[in-house]
Length: 109
Image (tube, rainbow, N blue to C red):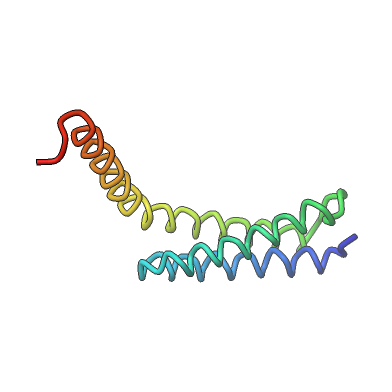
């Protein structure tokens, strides 16, 4: 079982990782973005398994809230950066699928 300080350390590490994810997304470094997301997911899993169930109070609670806000802000920035890329990828996939259907139906020219 994690102590409150352990929990806050994990949240701080996650906040740092999400900031690194923003930087990776802003540089279109998708491989790094995926690796950082996997590291963040490992922290989430550790919290699910070991975070104490009692609530925090005072400064610890405020720190946790601030870290969560930082992560949510970073997540919003990452989405803003990745959505155009995802839309472009979707168009490419759809175009390739359409091309395959045409070739299948009419043969290659």
